[in-house]
Image 1 (cartoon, rainbow, N blue to C red):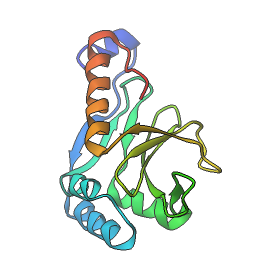
Image 2 (tube, helix red, strand yellow):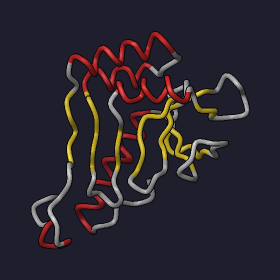
Image 3 (spheres, one colour):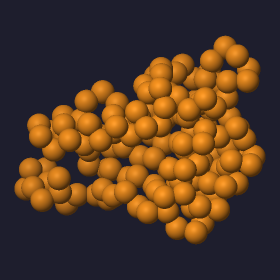
Length: 152
């Protein structure tokens, strides 16, 4: 993806990586599992993957490190993902356009309609983390093929 980036865009590529989890990431994942209802697949993800940063895929895609998810939780709390007060989610990332990704307690992944969490309106984009990661992969593949990342 980055081989032709500078030639195409006139500036060098940013950070485009899937960073493996380190000890701090794994400890933060375990803490997340203890302090809030965190989907098991998200904890498993954070035990292996520290973060995803694709700055140059469309406007960008970012899955935050577990430590950042914890900080977000401490500062702002959980996000309502439905009418049920028990349906509370964790902010897990964003796209470079400011839309925020939230993992619900049952594992579904939602995206905000605006760049704000104040009275956030969310759309379900994936039934679970695996499907969300597959959508991210498709976005990367499509971007590599035709320069368009899709809707995610």
